[in-house]
Length: 186
Image 1 (cartoon, one colour):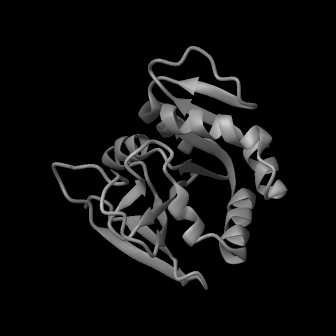
Image 2: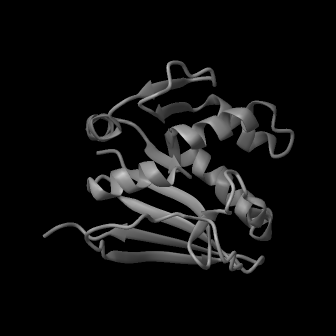
């Protein structure tokens, strides 16, 4: 069974972006050779990226012409991608297809052979898949900064979802990569 892993950078106060869409300059506080190597390893582990519409649009605008980190850019541009959207009509970024019902699609994909599927960014899609019980692991790079305001990575929920710590990796930048597994209903 394929795994679904959520990956994102998040501030100490829980935001994955600032108060404006794509306000991500805090990422540079965590970026360095260790995080670049980690991102490269993600590329070897996965064979499918899942994005919500807003994240897809930002990624599709950035990666096709990204000058830095050519190995990561090649991965991002070459890998199969899903844009979860009820409003998009076409997706022009290489190897992308649009999916209207992301829960049904992920359920189906988890039964097929393949490597790890990743959700990058995409807090709303993460929320939907987490509440549907489809997320196998959450990996967060906790960035050593308090923004004070922004877009929270985890959305309000009616029920708590306990997590089991799988591992931690401190980085020289002061950031920490945390790996969690959502507790299975029991």
